[in-house]
Amino acid sequence: MLSLSVRRVALAFCALLVVSAGFASCSRTIELGDELYASTSGCGDGTCGPTESCSSCQPDCGFCAGCGDGKCSATEDCGNCVQDCGVCKTCGDGTCQAQENCGSCPLDCGKCMTCGDGKCEANFESCATCPADCGVCKSCGDMMCDASENCSNCPGDCGVCTEKCPNGFCNPPEDCASCAPDCGVCPGCGDGKCNAGETCFTCPKDCGKCKDCGNGLCLPPGETCASCPEDCGVCSFCPNGKCEPFESCANCVDDCGKCNPVTCLEEVTCVLGCPLDFGSNPPNFDFTCVTDCFAKGCANTKFFVNQVINCAIAHIGDCGGMGGGGQGKILQCLQKFCGPAIAACLGAHC
Image: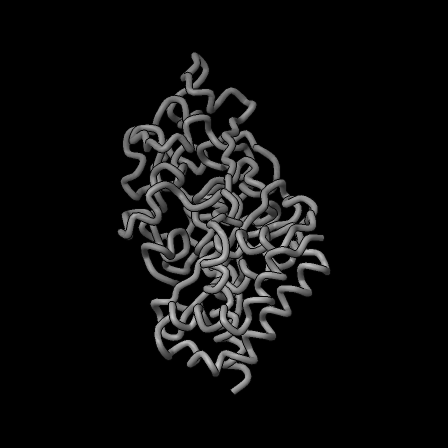
């Protein structure tokens, strides 16, 4: 059938290119930023000043005795013990109110200077105040936005903070826990273990996909491009200063630069950097990477590439298809029938 033949020919051609030139890569390294942001009120600067105490500035002076026992006592409130008393109702209004600080409401007051350093300081940080260091709380992931949760410390239950996430930039107070699409996954995600603090939302690589992921619908609050690319697509934003996966000079000039016409040989070396798996049945290859490589060619080189493919289509049956005689013999056979076309392609210039 034609569709199967075309696919086989495409794979055969990619393999044919392997024996015609050296190896090169057309992938790019992704760099994800992560900025720290401290409140300007003085609370959160890492020093417990003479006017500060555990009740007025938990980020600098530590939690008061009893904070974390599950009971909101008379000396505790939403400003100094989120885990017991919940998030302040004003958190998220865009203003750092008197009762709020970087520990209780990073959404309005910014992240504390120590939050994001990879160390969970037991006396100063908790899953409720700094999930980036301490991991998300046990209740995070039950699809219920509890009193101590908000979009900053549990986006899986409460939804991402839509005003800033995702937009392609990791801006404060965003971090890996609150906005993985912009800031990337937190350290530890990807080690093959669903560790404490990780959920299907924050680390699907280790914890598996969330139950609705894969139904074809990108459903908030539990799905984003980071937690469910199958439904929501990849986390690539144009323009944001980074040439991200599935972006190229053809679809994002601002991030990836202009496409410079290349020779057929240069197209070949780019294709060779794309994943080609002839060990699977049927064989697999990264079609997007291949097409991005071919997009860099000028009209002349595209003509010669097309000429080789047409020749391969005409003679793939003579060579036993992808399943007859072994890959090496098939390549030799195609070279026999299409040698002139291949030589013309490799010698072509823009």
